[in-house]
Image 1 (cartoon, rainbow over the protein chains, first blue to last red):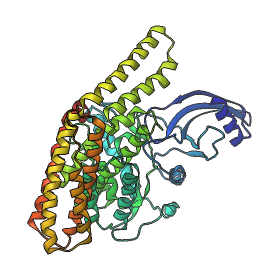
Image 2: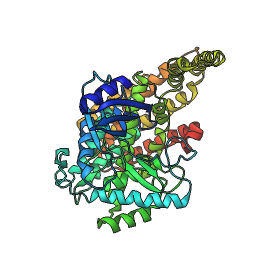
Image 3: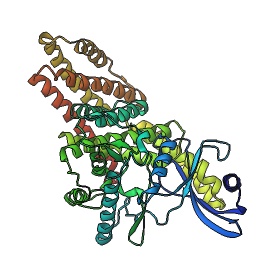
Image 4: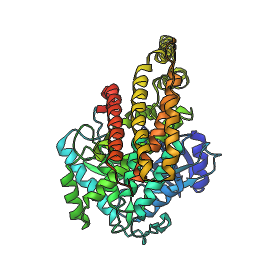
Length: 336
Length: 170
């Protein structure tokens, strides 16, 4: 694999001399694409250059079937902003290099927030650290929602019409995923989808929506968020959608804190202060319900690939078992 | 769909044999992995023979709920004419007729799973139909059926959550 990566980089950087690759390793976490890091050194115009890279390769099967080009273009569009997003170098659809399509991006400093003792998700145990992360985390969300998405060239994401189109689009998208991947009837998801269709809110504004705004998509170093990652579900929509997704209980890790980080009231208050956007709690509730369906759909996709033998990642099996927690949350939100 | 226990055990086995075993250099560790593989196969077989009871109970409860739904929907049909309703009632009744009866034999998991899936499919359709009918026909009896269905879903959800134990707190 190192040879193939070196050959690829050489093609993309023809002026690089004595190009070498080292420390190629898989990065744990992120089940939608295979992530690897490596270091490269070369000489250019007589100057020695060393740089760290990340490769995100399409998996054989995964939790999500997303458009790699969309994620690449969104992240590339955000390079001119002050959001902590890695620089994107190359998007490669040709399978001849690494067997599957991939993209190459800058490796950002930092690591995921310190692991809690619980399975899978991350949130810091130290309250002071947690508060610092939470503050920056909300600042990033506010920045995303305040972006001039037209000016950044993000119109290719497709702008929903006014009214309930934002909600309808997301319901349709995730209902299709459920229908495609479910292996048995899902009456609780049916209940949730019926409720969503009868309670679609109207969006008051259209913003860029990250689509996966939670605590395990950030990197952190010296008490500072250094990167916000995983833009593959980004789209244009109602900003309340990101808030609703963050409020899903699945990420709370045995606490009542949003994403294991912050009290809900404090989250909303600081978000309003930064954005000037009033948090509409019934809409957040709607998008929390949608978030439960969406996460269940993502899990069903993973369980399907595990059951079909296309994946051997036991994280998918574990997530499949914990999907019950989402059904529990839906039942609680619906009051039964 | 949550992965069934046998599928998880088979998945663990695949990882042991395809991903972990080739990476091992110690002969004793290799032997342990092979022994684990045998044990996993045995556990999958044992699951096949011991996991029927929750299914038997859930299927019985599903039948009770669907019987109540069928009775109410038949009464509703007298006042409210609707194609969905016309099509749904025979489907519920047909599914109620198709009960798995192992007779003298020990009940098997596979037919129970199939029965469970079929019953849930009809329940799913019933939920959708009740929601649709309630848009323009209000009835306490239909509301009660909806409540009964939700109570059933809650009960079995709680049972499954109990069985998951520590994973539900993760």
